[in-house]
Each structure stands twice: as structure tokens, then as C-alpha cells.
Figure 1: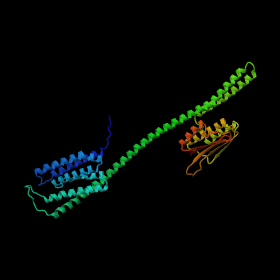
Figure 2 (figure 1 turned 90 degrees about the horizontal axis):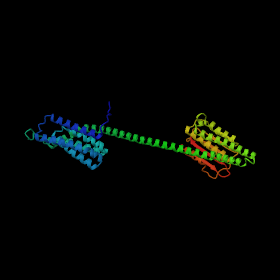
Figure 3 (figure 1 turned 90 degrees about the vertical axis):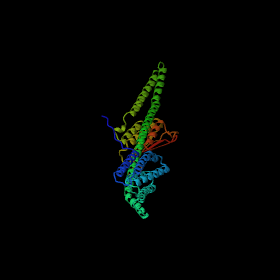
Figure 4 (figure 1 turned 45 degrees about the horizontal axis):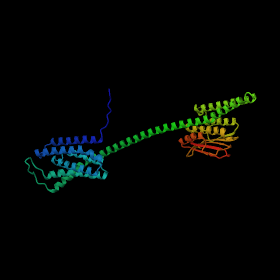
Length: 414
């Protein structure tokens, strides 16, 4: 069985239904009472004015509200209050309920000052209708029953204004509550829509960032394979060619070239294994960051570079992405150091952020005392590190010059 969801009616439609209901109730009350003044002519006029009042409201109220034109809204109220005053006069104020929707509209349409002016005009019309009636009281034969002085006219107006002011105040208060509730609901819906849009954009940005990081990593690995494995394969090919060239004349030299080719092949295989290992699970999955960085330092020491390693500050778990970036930065810095620095001494420092500082930044520094570089931007591998650091809101600093070593410093929020 299909289920249909119930949705609340639009405010404009609710107002139309309420107004028609109040008009019908007003006429039921009017014709249910004994009114000697209701001649056939007055009865027909009363019914006609009620139809006009309802038609004008149905045709114009929503359009005036959508247009927001002060002139159109003022004209609407002028027409409806005039028709309503005539209806109240003919019904001896028994149809007063049909004036209440106008007070509700004034709350929804106007600022407070003009709303009060409009409601005062409605009250004045309700009092004026009864005041005019007491001046023209007639019997069934159409003759005036008694002369009425002007004092009673004004007293009647005042009495009716006071009598109906409570009803108008009730409408103002509860319509104001409904308007504020509707505005609050619209604001919540607007914020929810903005939040959905923001979440959608965030997901798109996350996908783009992931694709960019993947592309950078692939490009970095391609560069490493080209620079590392390509170098080894070229050198192996040259050694084999040299060995074949002297094989018939100098067997010892040929064997020496083959031995070098084999050594280069082993080194190239180790380079491939390191590249494959970079694609596998992070070393930080099973070890803390200081220990993982320490293993990289041990590799540098095994390569003949005297490397000092220091961990500063209180060791504690950092954000997972921050630890990944620091580890990759250490890996990139020490790999470049072994390949290009020609250094005999280096320093690696891992500094944890100090507790209680406004901005807690973890810092990794890799410094070698090798040949340095004339390009302060670093190699291609550092581009990926720079992108990762920026995504975390961190900073990367590179200091180098020819003959003055190379320093890589990375700071990321901890």
C-alpha cells in the first residue's frame, strides 16, 4: 500500500480558508439573529457585499503579499476595510469576525508601526459602523424609531472600539507568534540547504584533494623509478657492453665488468623493493613515529652518513595525517640525502609541540652538510610533500645553497 506524506498547507492557502470560514460564520450569526432592520433590500446588499469581500480577498491578498508593493497593499486594506464597514453597518456589527483576517494580514505584511496604524483603522471602522447604525435606527416600516444625539454616536464608537480591541490584540499576538515560527522554520530550511550544499562541495573538494594526492604520489614514484631504476639499468647495460667488448681479449676485465653489473642489478632490485614498500601499508601502522623515523636514520648510517637523531619534547600520539606527513617528509629528505648530498654528516630532529601553547606545531628537520643545491625549491619529490603539508595547514622550509648543505624543515599542527 502506498503511503502519502501529509504536508502543511501554504500560509496563503491557510489564510484564504480561514477568511472564508469566518465570513460564513459571520453570516450565519447575522441571519440567525432577529434583525428588524433587515429589509429585503438590505439583505440582498449584505449578501452581495459579503461575496465581494470574499472574492477580493481570494483574488488579491496573495498577489499583494508577493508583490511587496506598499501601494497595492494599502489599496487592498482600504477596499476591504470599506466593504467590511458597510457589512458591519448592515449586520449591526454581528458580522465583526470577518474583520479579524485583515488584522492578521497587517501583522504578516507590515512593520510594527504600520501594522498598528492598520489595526487602529480596523477598530475605528468597527466602531464607526455601529455608530452610524445608531444614528439611523429604523423599524420594519422604514421609519426612524427615535432621535439620536451626537453624544451617543461617539459613545457607541468608543464602546465598540474597546469591545473589539481585545479580539484584535489576540489576533496580533498569535499571528505574530505564527509569523515568527514561520520565519524561524524558513531560516532553518535555508541553513539546512546551505549545509547540504557545503557538505556536497566538501565531498567534491575531498575527492579532488584525494585525486591530486594520488596523482602527485604516482608522479613522485614515476620520477623515483626513472631516476633510480633507470640509472641502474643504464649502468648495467654499459657494464655488460664493456664486458662483451673485451671478453675475447681480456677475460679478467670482462668478468670485472659483469661483477659490477651484478652489483648494480642488486642495488636496482633493492630500489624497486623500496618503491614497492612505499605503496604498501604505512610503517606507522605498527610503530610510533619516533621509532619509524629512527629506522630511516639507521638506513642513512648504514649508507656511511654519520647521522645524529634527536627527539625533543614529550612524545605523544599526534593526528594520524600529521604523523604520515612528518614520516614522508623524513623519508623524502633522507632519501635525497643519500642520493645527492654526498654528505658524511647529517642531523635529524623530531620536535613535539609544547603543551599549553595556542598553536601546537610538530616539527621535523633533516639537515645534511653535503654539496647543497642551487635550486631552493627542492626536487620533484618535495612537491608532493609540500602539497600534503599545505592540506594540513602547515609550513615547509628549505634552506640550501651550493656547497652549504641542505635543510628541510616541516611544521604541521599536532
